Length: 305
Image (cartoon, rainbow, N blue to C red; front, side, top):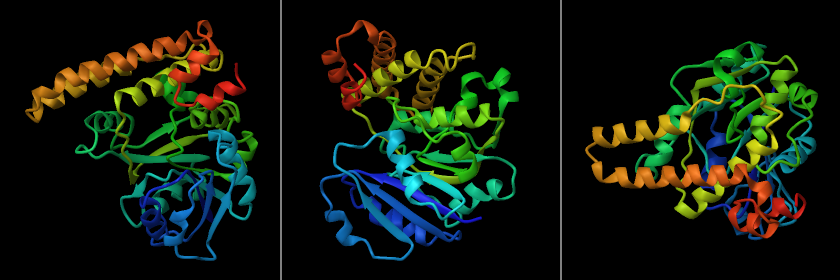
């Protein structure tokens, strides 16, 4: 079984050059398929041409998290395992991708996702978040884990994940009309089809987000929108209280590293997340014009008024 790495890009910085170089140094021999929705293609000048690298352009502004990835899968037909990454990730080791797809090759599961490690110096918030979502032990997820994990059964990330083409196609691919969390809905479809997903803790990438308050608000507004729109999909599943857990862990860690001055910022960011999420949950009471201003994915509202 061979693998293709699919990476959607939009006006990427120099990290894309180093990411491609890193992928070609992986112990797993890969084909790389980049789908570019940007309007600045200067980054391509720094990329070394290869028969195992294909770059396809789509019109700027046409990007859709699910639909664009589905298109890339359709255009890269020759390989039986699809690896999804984002332009801001970087493999930790030369065998990161080999470890990621090994369980699929062995027939142990239909899909996998790996561990994401954030840089504490870049984002304290993201560092704690990723330590919670990506622990140092493996997790098996299928229909039987719903009673224990609840909605976390379907947590999945296309920043660093892999799926067999057969399972991807059987699930109907990504949904093409969701505001975000298309990876979570793919996971739901695979598991509801009787499939199994494995979190592979030894397969690691560096991946850090450093959101300002404005972008943080918009991101969590969209999270709220998603969970309202998909309320029937996840009906009856235990939601948990991860938000409170994250805040407690952040405060404890701030004390541990003797950075008490971080605590007001932790509380402020947590309040912004909570407020944005609940406004998003009630988005049906808000005008389309205001939703566009509050949302990170404003184009979504052009066809979902």
